[in-house]
Length: 198
Length: 395
Image 1: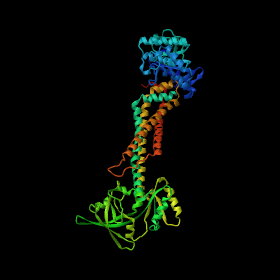
Image 2 (image 1 turned 90 degrees about the horizontal axis):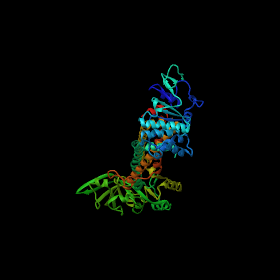
Image 3 (image 1 turned 180 degrees about the vertical axis):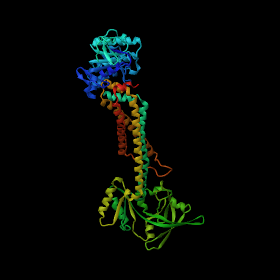
Image 4 (image 1 turned 90 degrees about the vertical axis):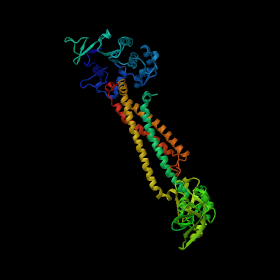
């Protein structure tokens, strides 16, 4: 989990890890690959196969149905025969089995975020990057989403990197990194005694 | 179905206003070209048709230096032995002075074109007789058909009136004959005998003192596309004569040349209209791209390559082009059918000769389809240049 106050650079860090933004200096290694040297097409493939994204605003494509939104990353990568079965399975896990063919703009914010989680997981990525995934939801729905992500992480043995300014919501997590003044610290609260990571 | 095609369709059809606008731009571009073609090519073809039907036939034969002195009946029979020839007829032309007394007043007109026709063959090779709106066509040696303008200039000559006609013969002597007006010719567009007098060819030969001479032969074909073949066959068959054989368009070159330039100009204006629709498509597609910036960012973030985004928006251009070309062609064909079936004319002038030029119809549809794709290239390229993180900030 990456925490920090607004404007501390959490989302920028996540965008760098997600290869959505280019660093002005330095290198980014994912799975041992220096991603700063990759071509645009390779970066796209990398995003598609190694990374999953969950955004603050679910960012579903309104022109597609719930199922089509979940299928999209698999189709972009070149679909296989199990794509639809996998997508339906994931939507079943997130509790949206009955909403498969609904247009993405016809479901609630909480449902949309659950679809976004399923979309982020469809390609079985190495890392799922979640940028303020509950930032746009009420507290009850936020709790549901947090529990869902935790259970998915456990069930699928999936790494999530979550950016949030609301640490309390997520309870116990494996690791917390705090961003402050452009520096990353291990742990919940930055102090001079903590290890500076960046 | 490929997800890019599905997305392109959905994105476009969910933006109905933009889609209808873009399709209308293509449709109107095509329609302008069709309307231009129907009117101006129709006018041109109508003029060629009238020249062919009233004056030249599909092939006209004259003598390079003088009158044709070969027997007219033998030449008519020679032509009519060719399977594609429907009929042939001799004609002779001169100018005349005419006068008639109307309501006790003598009215004289000079330099009136006078045409001698063979009543039997002329009605088979020409439709000039159909322009006689009052009375009947020339049927005897002393009957004359006056063009509507000649009749008017003679103080309102009517069927049954007597007209005195003066022709100067080959010796320079005045030859005067009296004729009975048997008909008044009035053609839509005025390319018939509206400004002439028409009499029996033998009478004119007598008056001109040119027994057996003929000015020209009009040859009418079953299939006018064989005109060149018939002309060449004729010239090959009479190598030692001074004959000139010409197709309608060759014979009327001077008359048609200016009109052809006009049509070319109008076509250029039509194609400029099509270019304007292409710019409209660029604008509308830019709006579509701007409206889908966030979606483009999301797609890029989940792995779509630049070329995938390019394909989506180019495919939208193809959809716009295909629907626009289809609707535009259908609307253009509808207008063409209407113009043909209603025998469209303007202010009672000549009836447009409307033809279905499939080559032109397909060419126009294809051109607008291709233009729509070309017009979508720049917006599509712009879409690929969006950075995912920047694009997703757009709301």
